[in-house]
Length: 89
Image (tube, one colour):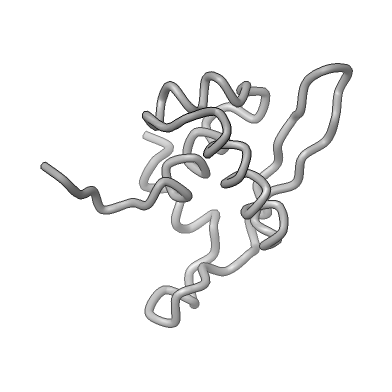
């Protein structure tokens, strides 16, 4: 299959939601993208207000902005928390 229902941004978001202490290398491996692409996506998610990153020593700890709303008009009534419920199983 050449496509999936979630974009790489969605996949990275799900990985961060599952494990706030996850490393970029681990996210990249789980999603199947490069570490550089992962860092870019995390930057996008932080800039968009969907994730916060806090430096803890040499590592980052991530937090999901649960009350942030999805960007696309068709899903804009959904919060990240509501969206991520399906992936917490």
